[in-house]
Image (tube, rainbow, N blue to C red; front, side, top):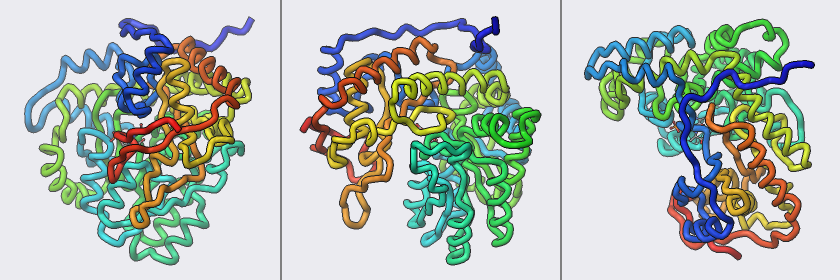
Length: 457
Ligand code: F0G
């Protein structure tokens, strides 16, 4: 008999979570104004709100915390951190930051000017926010295949080279850099191929532009390249990572994902001059150059986490768990973004609840039902998140209404995945009894989804 696949770690410490009743959950979600961000985490049984900062550190990472050097300047922890990053990415100049968006803030303070255009593949919200708040524009050049959840394409995070070339032809003088998000969170944790990275590099070189990689989930991207891209099967994850980053000038990183820590981030780059100009903003916004908003112990945990996060056995365990959940849902006929991505399952809410009007927030409706049904917290990636048009103040309705179920790293077992799947199946079976969604009763002028208050229609 063939031995079954199983996890490449065992559990040394546990954190109790509490089972709740449907009546309790109905009361709590109403009190939370049907906004899942407003829920106390103790009310949630399986928390799939995000895979960011929610991973379980290893025994070695916890040991590293004890070895942290808390000197203000020149701490050994900084050098451990920097050396790990340089070894893994090949990039020499490193600035620590307190998380990913802080890296964007420091770097874009140097590079992004009013009126600029920044092409990329479905920029993450904070990336877009840091571009738009500088009165510049993010242009999405993702391939069209990414927006059809039923289409199977191995690299749905790829840039459409014709779209990119058009932007460059028309407005290269306004483009400070091209940004590639690996994996592409907004399109469903979908990877970018090495072939696409190379081609983007060529276009950037043709116009004399930088390539920045938003690398929150770079190791998961490398895993997909190994598994799916011709010619990479026999390469190690680290070799693939080195090749990926050979096409980048700068990387920004939220270490809360693939470095498996609860907080942290960094910028890494080749150019000493850019490092010097970024250092000015680093000191203003984050802290001195060798700690950047982090404790020495955090720097140590990130260094260790980067080695663990680029280990094939770990990545295989991680991504196969996401696939495990996705395959059960597909078996039930539940519509999800395909192929299954790296960090999350994206349920296609428009196809799940086709009879709910978009004005009633389809993915949010599904997410509320899932919490009430099973105590599982996902997150809406749809019209609430898309916010209003800054000029007309009309609601923006994106092409896709998705409910994201992000899987924390090394935290839940497949029994938890079974529970999530069963909860969704129950809703799927009674989907025609869900007659209506929600209306907004209160919202903030920007980033409204975090604090929005809703009422049942
Ligand atoms: N880039 C990507 C691709 C991200 O997914 C995130 C965060 C960031 C940058 C910003 O990093 O949170 O450390 O400041 N994504 C989280 C999520 C919040 O839930 O997907 P951060």
